[in-house]
Image (cartoon, rainbow, N blue to C red; front, side, top):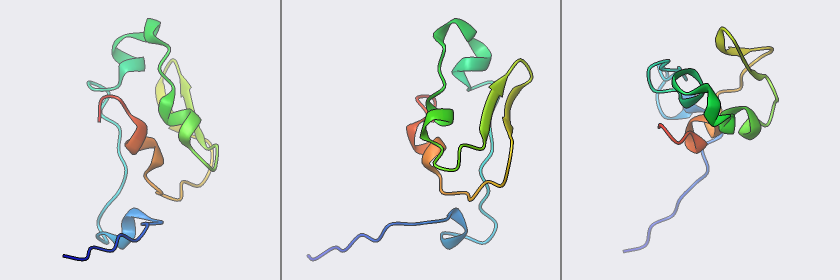
Length: 75
């Protein structure tokens, strides 16, 4: 069996309706602020994610590459 993997540059390539979202009940930085988790913020190649008292937010245009979701320890 010969399997070829191709990098997905956008979640829209998987399905038109796919969008990234944050579950505040699963987010470690929201549930346990002392963890200092900012894996998603560090993984963002566009540097548009911000983490503050109000939770996770966007400071620009998200390209929906999915890197933030891939590195999230909570999935």
